View 1 (tube, one colour):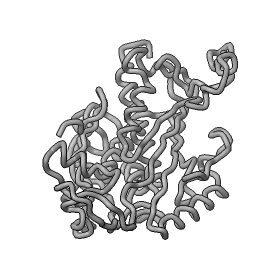
View 2 (spheres, rainbow, N blue to C red):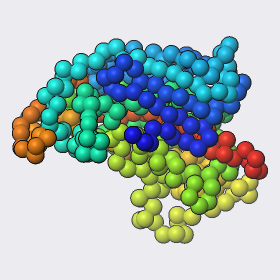
View 3 (tube, rainbow, N blue to C red):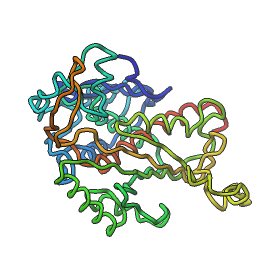
View 4 (cartoon, rainbow, N blue to C red):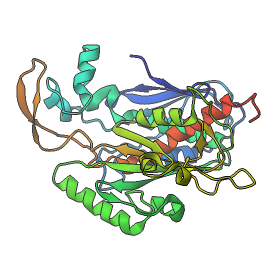
Amino acid sequence: MAGNTFGHLFKLTTFGESHGKAIGGVLDGCPAGLELDFEAVQTDLDRRKPGQSAIVTQRKEPDTVEFYSGIFEGKTTGTPIGFAIHNTNQKSNDYSHIRDSYRPSHADYVYDQKYGFRDYRGGGRSSARETASRVVGGAIAKQFLQGIEINAFVSQVGALQLEKAYDELDFSLIESNPVRCPDPEMAQKMEDYIKKIKKEGDTVGGVITCVAKNVPIGLGEPVFDKLHADLGKAMLSINAVKGFEYGSGFEGVKMKGSAHNDQFNTDGTTKTNHSGGIQGGVSNGMDIYFNVAFKPVATVIQPYETIDKEGNKVMTQGKGRHDPCVVPRAVPIVEAMTALVLADFMLLGRGSKL
């Protein structure tokens, strides 16, 4: 299986399956001499881990990361950083009912067709549990990106949508509720709705907004390696993501060019930021902001019709521990992938004027 490595110079390779002994990764390209805050790494993992509230999967995993290489006396050595997170709370029998059938809109069918073999326990390699390794790599990337602030938050659950612009929100409130929405009133509505959906045995999607502040001018290349192109790839590589838009996004099509253009101030900043901090594929020093759309989780705890390996129609029902809405736990994943992209472009920019 190819495609387990992300990045050009600051590269993360992940390994492991949802119900294997461990998941983990190798982070290559991190410069030497970076003093690591291990508590900060673990804090980001704790934000992603299962069982943290009533509105997420109740699988209980400590998700404690262990580092095996690339670090000496608390600092990076410049060599590959190897790490693992051991799985301790697998319940593989919860998946025995789909040993010979496929969950609709899940990776089950295409995985089996492509490889001729499939680990049906929790989705195996296609499980979102793999993203814990991304959070570790991203947490280290954040520490490399000194001065750059990356904040992601839930801006929509189902039809419940924040109306405030990101610069009207207090990011310090993101972690004040289990939904990770910085508007307390809307957060409560979202939480109540997710609980209702969970009680119905169903799932719901949502949107995560991410803002990167203090990004220097000059990250990205103007042709194939555009900054927003790699950000889009990073986000679309996350399980359940269906869409990515940056800056004015799809709403920009409603505007005339004269209104959409970001007029310059004399210091090179712009009066508006419809560009989302990126022009011509290169960061312009303004805030980078984008939205990431997540579909409803494919596994529903309801009876449904599907097919088995022989193509026969069969009835089955979702079982096990699943998120009724993935977006609250996906917030640190979006931040991690953003950090990995920015760290990569910081290294790619060395040797240029940047």
